[in-house]
Length: 247
Image 1: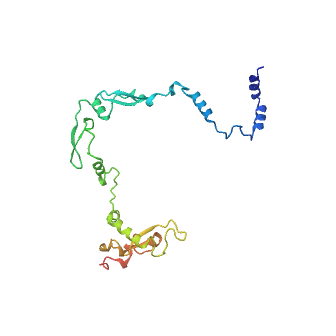
Image 2: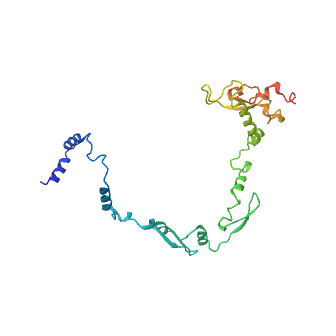
Image 3: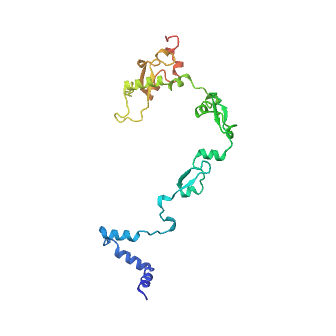
């Protein structure tokens, strides 16, 4: 029996395979860590030159880039071969001229700004606005489909304005984000997750002239803010802050 066939039959036996694995376990290859010489590298590269394992992966010049002529403008454009099999037009402009060759743009008036804008006839019955800005203005407040009749209070609207944000920032910088009552601050003595709020010393609703005065503000944590007499709806039941006593 030839030698090669005999070894193949031996490797079919599970006990023989296990014995061979145990014998070679822990041993290192004789050529491990030995770099190839320059002659060996050149010899290996010469052997592999010009060989391709599949005709699909065969190298072609310029990465398969080919040229084609546009149907509309007759300009020559280039691209990948796989894309040019389907592509017939060079740009979107030619695409519009190819799909709508006899169509002309129609003028319409915007429902918000009343400016005239041009569109293709296909959008004549659907286009209502000239820009995204006008589209956004058309969906605000009562015009929005999810509007439920809830109006934002003047106080909440004022808190989003620039003047209110600057006032709040100045007070936080002055007090260094430290609560005026408990003197706690995030990052000191293991304190973390402390919610910092800016409070009006004299109420916002009763003293309109002092709303944006820096002297009328202070930094409080949420726990200390809740203890004040003017927090939430406490002001309605507090006799010391009635409208008659406020000037």
